[in-house]
Length: 407
Image (cartoon, rainbow, N blue to C red):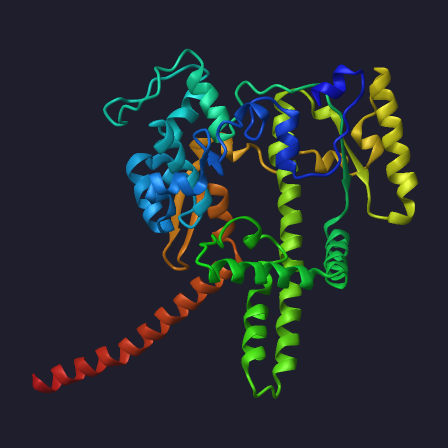
């Protein structure tokens, strides 16, 4: 991008994950070129994931064991993450094991805006050199993804083509159906054959990372397993219908997962991106365009975007977002008052003994206790208590009568 700008040209980014795009927009956020020295797949220089886990066996232990270890070395971060969030628990442990510093200490140093030596009585000495004035803050930015005095890499204009959720869901479902028609299942079967071939040769494959957990593959696990059974079974009565049912279930699960992923993308925009833009005074550089009706694409998307870009390049005043899209004011209002990842004071962990549910923020707890599922459990528990009380009452009366007879 810098090379493109050096030639007097304007870089244009289209698509990509929001996480990636945001790392390009802002300095010192996780994923930028500056933090490439700490890559979870290639840590400590040229150390591979296998080498990292060989050196620190706890990183390939069960999620429960990692959580227990993290509680010992960094209870703050252990309380931050859900007990089943293996990836984040592992990440926090990696930071501690590789640097000798708690992720929570690095985080606080960044938030306080100055370097802060870790407590030497609680953290073992490592071979790393004494941190300079800004080292802790830099490490927080690089390892935790915390903006360090966040600034933009370059003035930017952002165009968000928005589609109402109901319309978007229908499009996503049709997109999955087209993927199946275009050969998704053949790709899935090829990947499964590759997986079986590697494992048959004794090669260990981590099925909980990478493409093996991507949307569009893992959903076919039951179907692929049934296909192998069907192939080796001489009695095939009714099995064809069963396989077709499993395939259809897998497709529906992919559609559900895709819709959920789309919701998370929108949530990212309305929380992380909007807060980052506000912190850099760039909120007025984000415009929403109406992509709900594809037959009106030129009128609702192409025309307005050309007008915005022309004014931006000419340096003339930009229109107000609401002038382009009526619902822009609502959409550009952050969905949350704060970005929870930057507000450790709001990391409050709670356990619902009735439902067996764990929450890590007040917002999550409120959402849980007001959910239909929780209310149903509470109602069921109340009815059981009332039934038990009704059963105990006659027993008490019978015992009272027996005592009267004895007297």
